[in-house]
Image (cartoon, rainbow over all chains, first blue to last red):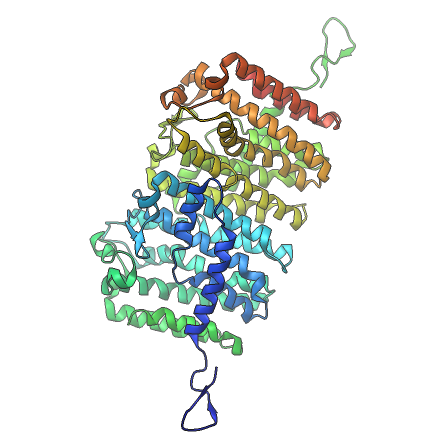
Length: 309
Length: 309
């Protein structure tokens, strides 16, 4: 990206990467693909409930990471679009189920009523189940331009990131830790490595797997993902304290109300910000071996921590 | 199978297929594979909840159909064992979620307290999510001896059988129809074709897909499966009226209490039995082109309708 300086006819590279434009373009691409992947059909209640949460906006960070990592290792983003959609379906399923009264009991999400407040608990549980199922089906049936071996590897990776060794495992430990003021840093790390970082990791690696990345490239991407994943969670904990429902689109102050141990409650706000920044720097450093194409992933890393200011 | 007649030294073929022994052997094989597939690990609460329902007995009809259809077309059952386990994980997930207070609100299943009565609703929702996820992961990572294309086709088929076009779609329409005395036969068929028959269909076809069945063979197996699937549901409706909680291991009379339209409520008990028997005969007839190896599938078809007497 190059801008013309009005006082000088020579172009000056003052804005090496326009993240805002990049994210907007990618987000539009993902929104369109999601809308198409999950068209309204019979039984409408189910598809309306699925679409209500799936198409409720959001940053689409996971799909965008998937597409960016696919391009990073020389793939065409088209090969990763079904997986990008699947990542968002899985993420949405986890939000719908987490918001249920039997779990976090949240009334608002992304500035709107949560799924079960609109459709009732039974439909919400089923909408989550259908989104989770459809994620796997969509990758299996819609991926084009990758070998079946790579598609299977992505499906296996998605499964690991969601099940007992991933998201669900993290959520179980999170539920069990609520109201316990003696939760250790080790447990807190377990919760977030599984509840948040695991899905971010497969978001980053899946796009690269489909594009045929080497094992060394995948190791590097895994490092990057783990670091931004933890930073992301620290930032989320900070925002729960410092943000407003208007800015965040969901309830704030929940962690304190629920007496949850969080990074800020263990480290304080300043140290938490500092840790997040260090993680982001380390994440960016791990990509040093890649060339120009790493710019989106560098910018996304910065963007994650920038949300706290 | 040949038995010796004690009055005559010549063996007489009086028992051409010992279904009881076949089912017992297969069931033991499936139980062992399930136990191994889902070993207890951290976080224990989650795995205990998953294992509580997954290893609670049951007929293991879906896995056994999968293994039998694999052998029918000349495959070794080993290739289908991970898929057989996945089918039972999916079936178990659907039972756990269906039993929740927000759905059918059942306290007993297979003679024991339902999952959420033991572990609480939050853990039960998550245990179902993890079982569903693990089903796909298990097929993707554990299937040996089949091409990746076939494994992907099975994963796609499982997805279709579970999501909005399968199990979940059927359950949504079922929930919406409860207490409505004007439910038509068409809607009732929709519910059961999706809630029950779809998973039975992929149970039968998946084993054959992994073994490399032709499209014509798969069409035939699909016919068989659709017929036993509908018969199975008619029989379930009959048993809800005629059986006891002790025999069935779950509550009975629920359909009448919930004012559900069922096959017996539309047709009466006698006509329902008659329809189930006709479906079973048609199912068996559709396998005419297969040889000796079809005997387990013939016997299983008979077994489904025999449960009503």
